Length: 313
Image (cartoon, helix red, strand yellow):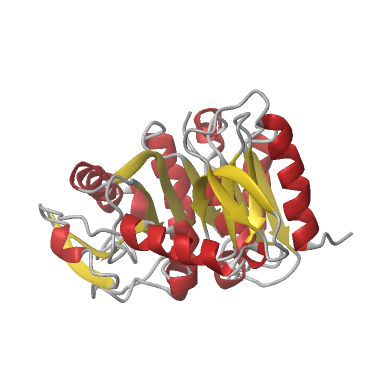
């Protein structure tokens, strides 16, 4: 059943009027709907589609932007401008925060890095470690796949701004070596820790995602550093049954295709069975798509939403 936006505004107003009997109005402001109705509530946050307000009883509600008056929309725009004051960064990562992908190297590990151009003062951002699949590529920058860029689109950054670091599993490790389970994996962990020291990163929201060899690497690094990584999304690659005991404690969403002829689905199913009793583990198996399901996975907004909801308590 669809709810009329103005009716929703009226319902929330009713709740707020009741809550004001015992609540405090210290930080409240008057909001006006397009039909002239008003309510008192504290501003919490806003997105491109709505505004979240706090009632006097401490609960929050989200109002569609469409129900708000022109005056309220102007006020929200002024708040966005005020909160977007640039942050003066220093250190080795400062010059990489450009609003676009930048290339660098840390102690022999080449990597690509993305940081939002305008960082809000006092705000901390999630960090996403993206691990590419097996490749004989040895040129930094080519490891940045389209699936990684789904996290850096302008519309995505409006609601889920984050830092993204995509290291290169250089040769011989990337093609014939041990991949992310070898030296580049250890270096990737060091890279994440270095970024966390230098940038305004939310330590409770450090994620790792990976495709194929990077999917195996996702599970391996999470098992190696369970206190570092909050959650992971491995695609067409999985963890070992031996790591399941440690990984059961972490939010993981595994994706695989039943007709994958490069990495057999049998291993994913076995890992899913080993993780079966975990309340934080999800397994999605596509009936088709072969080994190339990575785009389908990260083009899905639900995957982004799930990942960014994960937070260490």
